[in-house]
Length: 418
Image (cartoon, rainbow, N blue to C red; front, side, top):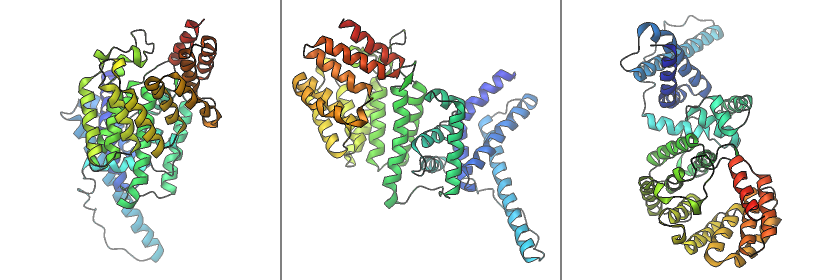
């Protein structure tokens, strides 16, 4: 096997196998950083051994066994260190110590271990950007360079976030466990938030030259499916999965052949993934059956379903969407939700009532530099027959956008108005 083929094989195996192996070792060792190091050592061993010995019949099993043996060695080393400490402390001769029987110590259901690792990586003691970086590193199998490219920040910044996150988890002695029922809600909210942050950055990149980053969407969907499978009675987990499936179903139609953005009214709905829509609707039904009517992800998934089931843009049930945004704003107040409600009201009832709802949002400091606020203003002004003001609003929105594709759309809308 040549060097390039070997590296590609190991890269693929890292993405597929490393999350589960790190999860197993981290549970047993209680140290995420050390667990990752031992799993990395197994990949280094493969890089050294496989060129001479050839590719094993089952490469994943070879790596799992090697990582498991390193974990057992670590446990034995710790046990020996404790014995020596006791010897030095008491100055007595200890009895001979047999090697610990750790053959089953690292065996557990891989899904449960992955779920534990997810709750640790998304622990609320970490800042949001640290949670995202650590989750993608450990559970997404992404390299530090890949994470940095995905979020358009320096590699050194991402590396520092990950190192600080691991140190914080160790210093705080965060237990490697799924929280008990009374604490599950707050912790699950943190986990879901991180997964959705990752999905959103993939679905509508906040900056850079790409409108979509499919790899991030896929990682978020994979994590969301794990959560829904392992927490079958949690409506929020099914709601988030439904929302991501329904939104991702439109991905192929959201980008033109030249990479430019295609907005919702102009999308070819024949390119929407009907199988994915069906999966999303099934997850939404499950969330509603579990009583998730007022959950924020469930409500957003219901809105996404309204879009997904409309065969044409003009068939969209905008009154229903406006109603759902009102419910969402009531249970989960947010200026962004209010802005989305303005858009829905404009479609359902016309630009005049939407314009009245829009005005208070300009007094909210959180939206001061939010490009979509000015884009919505431009859209409403255009519908109200005020093209010059609309053009100014689109130019203002373009100046606030850090995404090249979004900026091009806004500039084109301004240019069309002269």
